[in-house]
Length: 376
Ligand SMILES: *Cc1c(COP(=O)(O)O)cnc(C)c1O
Image (cartoon, rainbow, N blue to C red):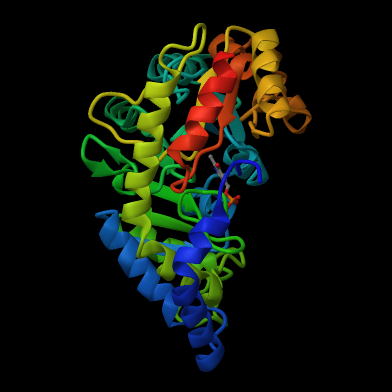
């Protein structure tokens, strides 16, 4: 059998009993939506993230939409974010009628570049009278936190909110702090392929502020007031299922151990790949940790990448490009009038990046095979 890109089967063997027990519990009590598993999960993950409030929701996308709705983002608002991310980050902004303003990325971490963020905020303030700068969504790409010590003051000094898109980084730390305790609000996803995944869709929003928490709880269920048939604002159906929460509770019990195993796998890759010529291995900024949602390498150029990925394919080793087409080049955002080359670092990285198999159950032998193929 070939090497899986993400091995959810090996994980299932470990948690099978607990998962089945959790699902049986839901079937027994019958509260399929907003059952007791939701608050239990919210309490555990808030505690783990060292943050006061957690609000479970239906997906990482809904988490972002709920956060933006809590900040009353709408038409005429500019929200600054990276074009080198999954569609949902910028889509959530545009769905609310606001305008995503893209910012180039750092060449090492692939996260939003604080210097370019400063330039883009100034540009909107001075030259885009049609837009009101409203907030920033920073993304912790591939599991590594963005540069929050620079981004947060930049946002707050300009009167902007900061949302942390931690869909790929739940469990990572920035200078010792859990990523979901950062920013005004942090959002994560429990899509199966994320570091902490359920068996369907799920997400969570985190906030320190009591007022924001109340808003998020209301927005999650159609803008409800004191009871669910009183609607005091517009909201969505953003609830998390009890069964997915039960799955997450079972998986969360082994999550800290899995984070360690991911780090060990990343360390082994770094060592095994250190002497492959013309290949850049990922680097985590000093003082931070990554949860290695992806292990992403940079080739010299797109031809070199194609050559390496072909070698892997010929040896039955999967590799994936995250992301081949940055958001500013996507048709869905054509009305923003960006073109290839507008974000030189992002465009160059998109032409050169590819990701290797990465999960907690990756065996050293398989990593040696992968390294050998890349060297050969
Ligand atoms: C996966 C992901 C999302 C969206 O999460 P879903 O649960 O799939 O809706 C948002 N942002 C980033 C960076 C992601 O990787």
